[in-house]
Length: 162
Length: 94
Image 1 (cartoon, rainbow over the protein chains, first blue to last red):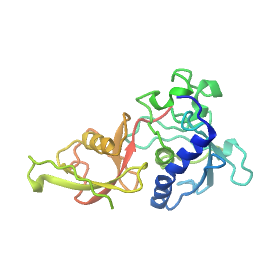
Image 2 (cartoon, rainbow over the protein chains, first blue to last red):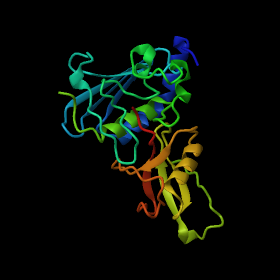
Image 3 (cartoon, rainbow over the protein chains, first blue to last red):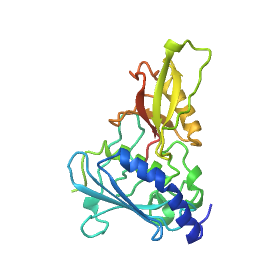
Image 4 (cartoon, chains in turn yellow, brown):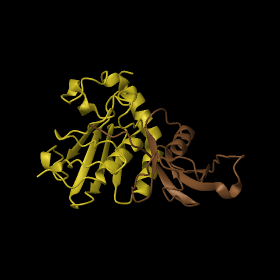
């Protein structure tokens, strides 16, 4: 699957809105804003241990042909800074954290995890096959699935980077 | 609430657990009946299929984000009748 036209991306995002809204309703500590026209998602939540305000953004350009570009950013500036990224800690029953020590979400559904975007994985067959990459790793094909994975892994994070 | 029931016709009614499953990709939950002795992993696979998930490593988590052991039975994981569970993927990262 390759990058898709902007209008298709916007339609897909709009189609996923009810599930995202329902997910956020079930997670009252999360506030999620989706902007189909801008092809952007923003989620705010406190870190479950430190209480630090976290902001997660997703650049959805090319989605779902390409996975989102997820980043933890400083809520005040919108800039990606090391201190905004959670420390890894896998919940019991899960094989490993998605919060990589190089401060990217390390998952097939995360654009920055791929070598072509400077990430650690050159072994996942490239961005275009993201939905079928690394079958033993975290699987999330929709934005709500991805938010749920982030929330689940965040629940075991001991804090944020100093 | 959308109700979809996984009928297990050969299992006596008192040996069945009714569970209400939320999946991230669907606004509404679905209701399933599973044998108490069903493995969490098998039940989660059934639920994942019903929600349209392909592949992955599905399990259940409680509303407190406690992930159930896929290799244990629902009963052994103390799932009770009418319990609400979340469908989660436990594939992990890194």
